[in-house]
Structures are given as structure tokens and as C-alpha cells.
Image 1 (tube, rainbow, N blue to C red):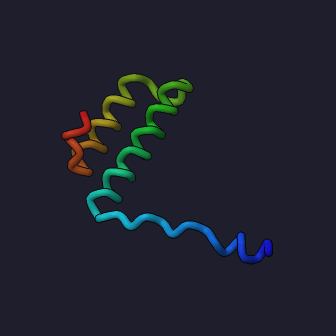
Image 2 (cartoon, helix red, strand yellow):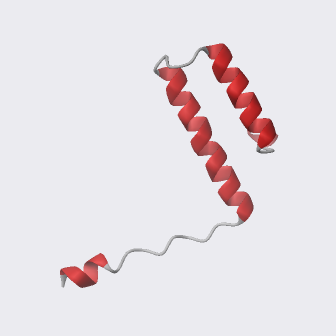
Length: 63
């Protein structure tokens, strides 16, 4: 029975390329947020990195 339960994992919900891109952007932003929160980077570094990430990934709608 355990074998059956282990193999009943949910299939990942398919994402469009745009959804994948947005998901990656949000994960990257979350990482930058954590770095800033824990003092690993300065506010200036955070602003620069987030700006670069936003432009390179075409996510200006998220600012």
C-alpha cells in the first residue's frame, strides 16, 4: 500500500512560458528580499540588482 501512495504524487500544473518566467522572477526577487533582510547586501545593491533583474526579464509590470 505504501508503494501506491508514494506513486500517487500530483502532476505539476503545466505553466506557460510566461508563467514560468514570472515564477522565476518572483523567486529571484524573494532571494534578493532575504539577502536584504539579513544584511547580506546593502539597500543600494538590492535596488541595483532588482532593477537589473526586472529589466532583463521584462517584468517592469512588477515594480
